[in-house]
Length: 125
Image 1: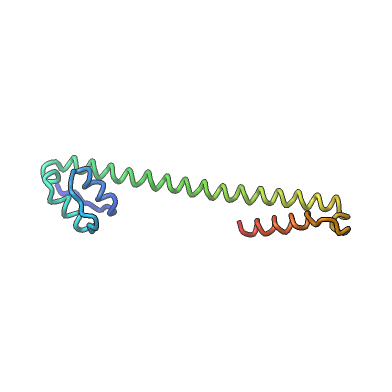
Image 2: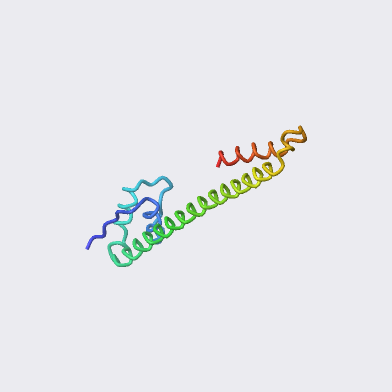
């Protein structure tokens, strides 16, 4: 029974490498399919090739899941950073409400500068 090779290029390359086939550097998908299908391994041991295909698909699935988890982690890190900046901004605002004279007296406007820089950093997140 023939085996359908509906695989991505990197999956086909993986199967061909596992079969011990020589792959040209710029091989197209159609060439890879023909290379695999015309090999002695494919003709003589289709079950072995089937297991290689299943392994390649499983590996691709695991990589996709890993990439998705990493993307979710990055998103959570960004959210956490934004929350930290918002907390810091709230603290500075509360501090400025307690000490309104520092803003009016012309003393170093570090609180104002802090507020402005925090607002800018939150907007960029």
